Image (tube, rainbow, N blue to C red; front, side, top):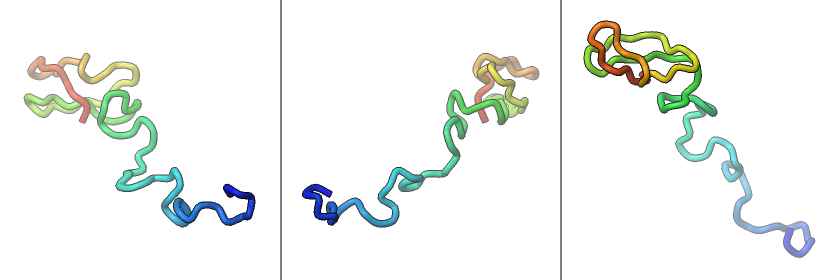
Length: 76
């Protein structure tokens, strides 16, 4: 309300203009997904042989070695 007349600006009003999910947001929340720091759940996957291990909280997947082939794991 720039002049106190109760009108407000003509832009930026209506549905979809707030700070919600926005365009194309997946709604995974903070720490969701497969990027580093993605939270305690999920799996670590070997990019070489495909072996999967449950992710352990506090230990990044790239610090774990694959039990089958010894390659560094990635978040999967």
